[in-house]
Amino acid sequence: MRQIMRWRKALELSQPAVETVASIGIAAGLLWCSARKMSFNSFVALNAGMAMLYPAFKSMSRIYLMMQKCLASTSKVFELLDREPAINDSPTAKTLPRVRGEISFREVSFTYGGETPAVTQIDLNIPPGTTCALVGASGAGKTTLLALLQRLYMSCQAYSC
Ligand SMILES: Nc1ncnc2c1ncn2[C@@H]1O[C@H](COP(=O)(O)OP(=O)(O)OP(=O)(O)O)[C@@H](O)[C@H]1O
Ligand SMILES: [Mg+2]
Image (cartoon, rainbow, N blue to C red; front, side):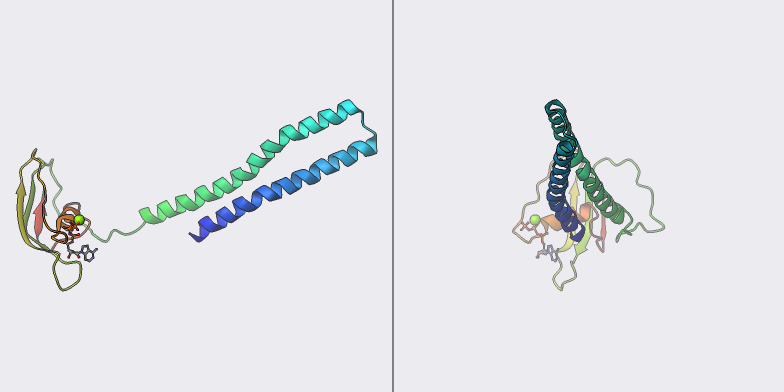
């Protein structure tokens, strides 16, 4: 968050900085023209050249900032990828063969850490290729069962698919 704020601040500061430098450049160009007693045609050509170069310089100043932002975002992604997963396979875990799509919960219980379990002793069998609806009051444990199925948490009992 701090990196993004710093990037935003730099981006907001870059525009006035570029404008200031461009104004100084144009003023210096005009002074140079008057000092050298340049013809009207050359003066117009110089002005046109500076006007054409200005947007290019402006976008170049943004490229560096965009690169900084990309680097910050990429390092966040790698930080996430390098994290040790909280749930690991048991060393004796078997390789999952091709699944048929059957979902089976056997005496599944789970608690989020509090005294009251979120789900208790759930037995459920959903045959492959069928559609099933989990219906229950708010707090009954529907989302918890789906989270367990995706292995976002580890249950104390067995479930398979
Ligand atoms: N992250 C959590 N930390 C602690 N307790 C939780 C957490 N998520 C859910 N619970 C508790 O687990 C129980 C089951 O919640 P769950 O969200 O699975 O119910 P639900 O059936 O999906 O409810 P809803 O219909 O409101 O979505 C509830 O008592 C709830 O307070
Ligand atoms: Mg829910």
